[in-house]
Length: 187
Image (cartoon, rainbow, N blue to C red; front, side, top):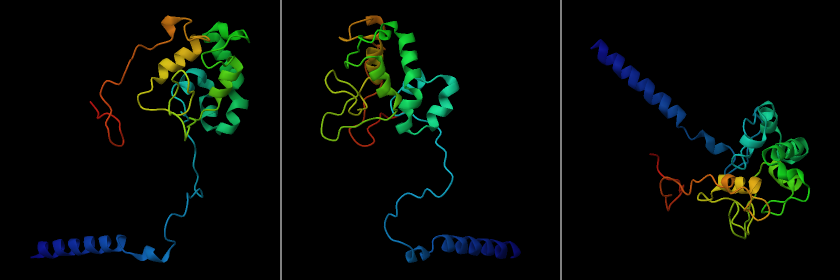
């Protein structure tokens, strides 16, 4: 009998906590979205707007600084370091007349890369690079690593250093879904 009373008291306590937490006393506050709340303390930890750019072009000693620098300040802080890394990867970029498949010389290319945001075209083709459209977004099927290799090593026509311009991974290992979120199911 004593055990049943304890059980009933525990159930009553659980119900009262549930009722309290599920109360509708929030009806007195604003209705609808109120916008983001930035009153707390937040810290940006990572920045990966464009795949592999942070990994390849940012030195280990600069990772924290790059990850916490707002994009509008990244070009001034990191473009020259990116250019030095690009010229080390492909010395042909040291020639100011040398361009990649985008028509960018080393300074222009690394200036675009140093601001680590993924630009998106709202009216045109969405692609990382398809030979005509440049960094206008990204689809899941875009081979961004091969594109980045092509832009680093391929030269103006994309044909320089053919052994370095393709990662030889021609597609996802599983088909993408036709419905949101479109990613393939895990293995």
